[in-house]
Image (cartoon, rainbow, N blue to C red; front, side, top):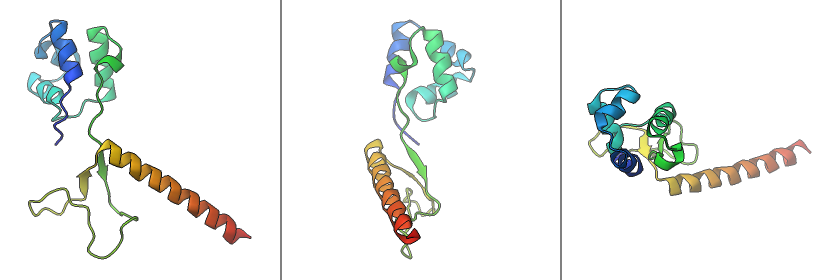
Length: 128
């Protein structure tokens, strides 16, 4: 569960004088679910962002805030040593779902892109 509150959305909603109930009716969803979306506990879909922006008469960029990045890693090829697992829960559950910050995810992507480049070079070398 993410605790990335949607401050921009909340601020614009309050500034324009709308209630959470009015916003919930736009999506449409229950007000309790909208409240969880605004508090960051539940994700807001792209379609919902668009509907909310249209209702508030603002560009999506004015209210949109990124979700915390969530990766589901089933076969972590970059760490396949025995006993290695990605575990986000400390309650004994064996979960392969973990939250990774945007900064870290960008680093992982860069590393993977470099690795792909090296693999492509290796493929070309082996073709010769």
